[in-house]
Image (cartoon, rainbow, N blue to C red):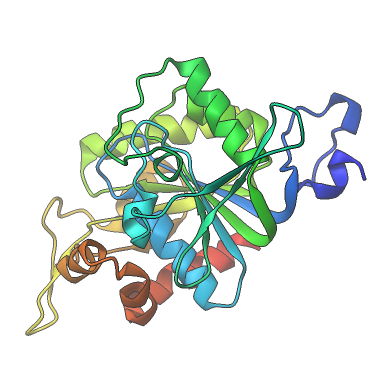
Length: 281
């Protein structure tokens, strides 16, 4: 079997196998790889990744999550699996290893550096080349099995890891996460321009923390900006996937390790999946 046979981009690119620089997983077949990125930290990128993963799984898809934020991994916390650890197997008498991801209660396969270290608080004090090397190894050497979607929670900004993912991993598209503030939008636009320069397909933007909804009357109160999500998306020059509220109930569910259950039952998040599937076509 050639690398092209297991590549998600098979039939979608013009590259020949001999000249292709895209990486493919050794232990599995993945149909679609989606990067989730922002230009700035603290906008809820990991939360959006987790919500989208749960919604896809709820719809019947086989889903995996690669926590690509090596120095700030948070996906295990979102899924409430931070006390578990991924298994590591040595391949024969070689130095190669295979990672077995941790499965969530909904059956989402997750690999993260925090699932490979003894303690989740243990810091990673590495330079760029080491970080990108670990990232690509977690992608290629994890036993993914057959997946419909692999979501990659990317670190913020336009640094080494973002560049490696955009250049080396066959992305079907990218979801950009922002918040309703002009300064944030300006920084996020750097990521949009970077992706365009590298010919990476951007599906659209999720505006997170768009508003707070009054539990009594249902009024949407915009906290950070009076501008609409549509205006922010127009500034970025990409489609609006969804606008998501500040939700303390979601925060509480994550702290209890019950985010999957909450997300699957919260109807507002269905809009995210509907728009995502429409833009993926």
